[in-house]
Image (tube, rainbow, N blue to C red; front, side):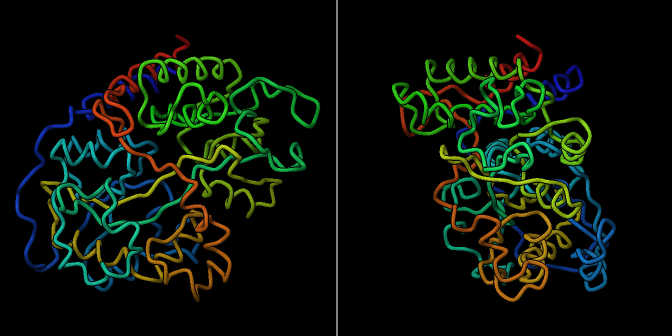
Amino acid sequence: MAHTAKRLSASLSGVALLLANVANAAPLQEIGPGEGAVDIVAWPGYIERGETDPAYDWVTDFEAETGCKVRVKTAGTSDEMVALMNEGGFDLVTASGDASLRLIYGKRVQEINIDLIPSWNTIDPRLQNAPWHTVEGKHYGVPYQWGSNVLMYNSEVFPEPPRSWSVVFVEQTLPDGKSNKGRVQAFDGPIYIADAALYLMAHRPELGIEDPYELNEEQYKAALDLLRQQRKIVHRYWHDPFVQIDDFVNEGVVASSSWPFQVNLLESKGFPIGSTIPEEGATGWADTTMMHVDAPHPNCAYMWLEHSLNKKLQGDLAAWFGSVPVVPAACEGNELLGPDGCKKNGIDNFDRIHFWKTPRAQCETQGTCVPYYRWVTDYIAILGGR
């Protein structure tokens, strides 16, 4: 846990207080010659060049067409992404909603000129003006993919999908007659406090939680208490999807919050795996490709932003990651995704997902809420057993 706590502590520098004004620098007005490279901070599996599986490659053609070499730095949590963007030297980041507003108000990303993105109008209208990348009518990124944080489970232990997130929050006997203690995992990121709050929305309605990212002191304390209780049964707090896959295969882990990416890889290996969105609903992510305010390769970056909306890329990525394309047309006619791929990946669950967003002191559902910097410090304490 020491490494985790150190990494999360470092991220506090990225929790910069949300300032009153955002950066006002004018966006690029025209795309010039490429600079020869583009540096991207991305979630694992988001930028593939066929090295893992030759069928999944949306980089090679882009490099051939533009002369822009794609260089990727993977990050396992939103806090890592914010820390890397604060350090600088990168052009783009595939930011989730719990990072995007921090980057905007921290003046780490620049406004995007959507007139330079010819495919902008192909984006799902529900995402074009989403509040996690649109501030004061200005766009600070291009939507990339979206999906839910599913409950992944070993289908030999659970012959039927678990109906509730209780299997990872509350100590209990599982269908195989054994305890869940030491056999479940939780996400290694402060935003996971919202998962606890979502569970409490259903199981402790007297708390009056309306939004799992907007918690008053009483609601927040209840979420922390649940997470401290959960810590007694957690095998590992995960952030590396490949480590989690190994834990399911070799370490006896049978249930955890996860991404469809892990589910797909385990299925491809023939492992007995399943996933579900339980009765309480789920948190989720709608990721946006955002451009650093001091991007060293702005022309190549804009070329990638347009390329990221390519219909084939969108469908191939959805098939690979288990996500949903932000370009709805990508759901049709994609060989890798198949005719039912978007349905399998949860396109019909949009209204059941509470998308990640940065908790703020001033919130809509109640006057004052616990701000994100508290989430960070308190989650570090929980990971440390306090």
